[in-house]
Length: 285
Image 1: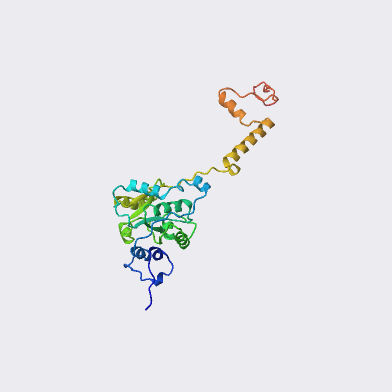
Image 2 (image 1 turned 60 degrees about the horizontal axis):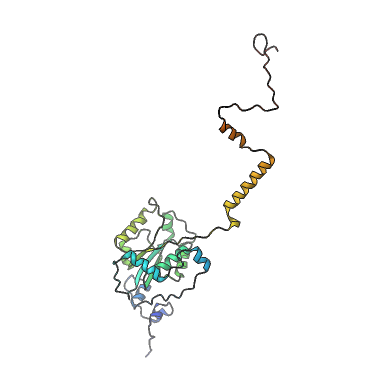
């Protein structure tokens, strides 16, 4: 009689040798969702590579700890979640273009993943058609964007057909507990009106949690500072004009200071009375 391999939390959640196990499926639910139902997912151990000192200076959310993030989420949702159920794995959803995947994107995904002690993070990726319909031009095709997101350490499940407007039907189908929304995101109501409807729905269902938007603060090197180069070029131009002694703006300044005075005659031009004949005309002279 063949012996079955023992199941522990780490082996269940890994992608190695999943064919050796009987995975429980509930209709259209995803494989990852079925695996998550087999037991409690391990909590994030906090073992992530430390960021570079330059990254700490450049990205303001890099230094947020799991405790900082969870405290921020608790203040936001208040008593809407059952905090007594600490063993539960919360399903959190984030969507985006992710083409390319930027530091701001991954830092939001990190906050979403650490928003509760145990999180199954779903990352929705807009299709090329959805992007085109909403005047967005991703730098990578849809398959590439999904593959890049799949390899992000914080993502547990990729949703390749993410809707532009979130609906209650979609949230139920994906068993989404919360949707992570970046605070301070700039949205044009004329363009993103349909997307705002989804945000309003999520907030009305008390399923929205905030992630702090990442702001970058890196001074531009002087060697490539266009403002400094422009100022330098302007100073050089002024110096050349002064050296040549021909300031083209002098006449304009004089005209503005004395608008009702006649301009002086050039020194080389002497005044001469017009010549007329006996009839007062210039003919016959």
